[in-house]
Image (cartoon, rainbow, N blue to C red):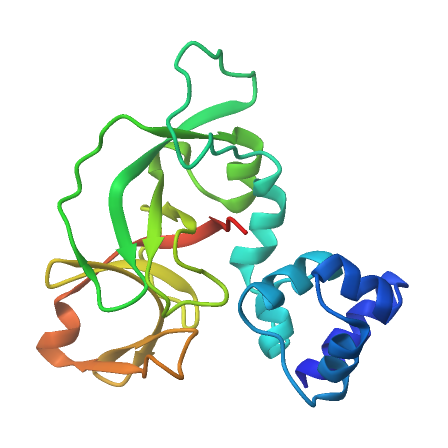
Length: 234
């Protein structure tokens, strides 16, 4: 249960409910309610809680460690976004282990109904460590970053998050997160293979139900790439 995982992670960090509450920005009573299962954290509280406990949001939600979050802990320390996703100063020299990854600033991968946009690269870039991409199994030339819009992937990917996409990895593995193109819409979703079709799932299932596509409809869905990293602005 989520409540048990919160308590487990807190105890492993050897931190009191009061101290954790101060770090997350809630009261000791709220932490106690989360650990007893009376209430549950959501939104920014869930993201902040995972950060302070040193675990992934996915682990708190379902007890499974998602590859995306595991990788992102390493990459976040080595990838930089300037300001509110401004391009890098081209005069800043690259470090020995750094590489610039194209950032499609004008492309919004919708975490909702979808965004009808044309992919037009405008020269913006983000910087990653080559060694970090190597650990993620991502070839530098296949990496790209895009902006997320909408609420269907909350609390893991809130509106305004930035996602890193491995365009060379388009083979679907059930439950993994992918950037997809569907009838001209760009979306980021969890994908599952089902008999003769494809299931598209959101994290925010209360507002966004599963979508099943069969036969010809499923073949219209193009997988752009696996989401190997994401960064959330709090």
